[in-house]
Image (tube, rainbow, N blue to C red; front, side):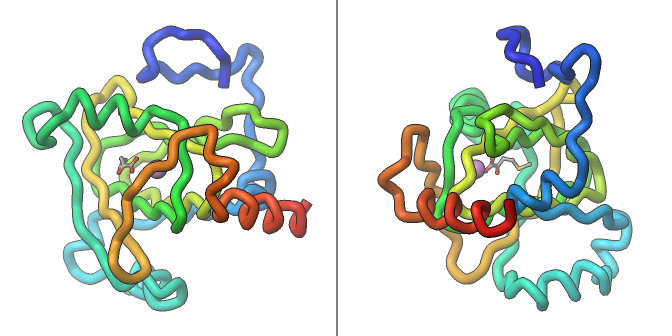
Length: 174
Ligand code: KMT
Ligand code: NI
C-alpha cells in the first residue's frame, strides 16, 4: 500500500498497483479462505472442518459500527495502531468489509481487503493493524484456540517472545 496519510479507510493502492501474490501471503504465515457466509447460520461444514483442523474452540461475534460498538472511536484507533499478539488473530467476515494490513519481510505494508465470506488468519508475532473501509461497517466472527487473549502489543514489541518465534518461522519458509 502507499504511505500517504490520507483517510485510513481509503484503499491506499500503489499506482501502478502492486498485487501481493497468494504465495507471498502464505510465506508470511497468513492464511485465507473464501467461504459462503450465508451458510454460517446453518453450520457450514467447511468452516467446521477448518475449526476442527486448527483447534478453534472459542468464537464470538463483533459488529463494528458507531452504534453497535461501545467505545467505538477508541477501538478504531487501537485497531489501527501497529501491533502483534501472542496468538493467532482469526476473523471471519460475516457481513461488511474492512482492511487488515500486515508487514511483509521488507517491512512494507500489505493491505488485505476482507469482504463477506473471508476467513483470515494472522499469525502470532506478525505486525499488523485493522481499519474499516468506506462502507464503515463490518460484522466478524472472532475465533480462538482456548481462552481468548486479545491483548495488542504495540510496535516496538521486539522483546515479546512471539516476535522472535514469528521471525524464525518465516525464515524457515523464505
Ligand atoms: C481486531 O482485533 O483488530 C478486531 O477485532 C477488529 C477487526 S474484526 C473485523
Ligand atoms: Ni490484532
